[in-house]
Image 1: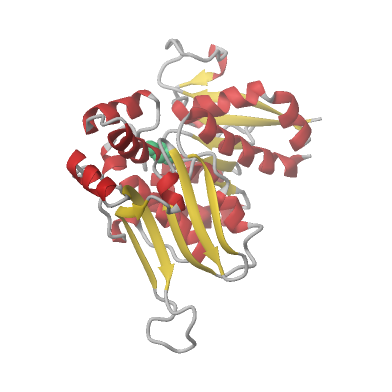
Image 2: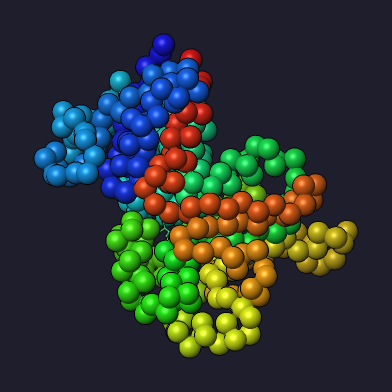
Length: 331
Ligand code: HSE
């Protein structure tokens, strides 16, 4: 059986989730991929830091080149987060002939063109299912089994932290700050939770969804974005009195799909903002860190994908799935 060697850049929340899954499910992963997949290098700041997971200190390095430029490594899993140095490391890994898997929505959204072009130029695979919706397989679905559709609309709850905060404020009357602190402790929030609460993380994810579904790369800074930091307990109560919930929604709609020559045909509209949803709307029932994406295709009609959108194991699940798909080509 061929051995496929993984280099893991970062061993925080996402990296440790993926690492644990490789060990927990090693037999079924080997069966599915036809390869023995081993993590043979881990980039971390400290070899000796106390960790919740058991990693052989000999595979830990603080030198990224020992992974990115290591001829033994086949697939680099980037789990550092943030735009830089993650983007530079991914581009360098591709130049060195390595396939790249990442969950890093900020880096992909900022540099989608550069990263996808570098992968094509270097003949390597670049996969990023974990970057949108955590464990929900929405990107692979858009890119494979739904490819026969022209998409008309996407509407999604794609940030676990803010959905958790809004749920706890509504259902348990928790103050905003307490709910945010809980989300951080549970490992849902970004290193700087401003990205979550101001909608920046959702805009990053909408950029990726639109690039795949509509073939249009719209940078996150060009998406009109409002977060939840100004939502008060009184707003949530007022919404409840109207039979509604407040949800942070990523929305994209292709206009003019039913007319042949109207002016707005082919014009994509997009936004990230808190919206009032009636309690019987399917997205209103999506609570805590769960995410859901509604997507409409002209052949398939409406689909809804639902699952855990944040956290080490759900996000690690998507990372490992991408690695297995790449490893199949090594058999
Ligand atoms: N901070 C992100 C969230 C992590 O809360 O959804 C998953 O992308």
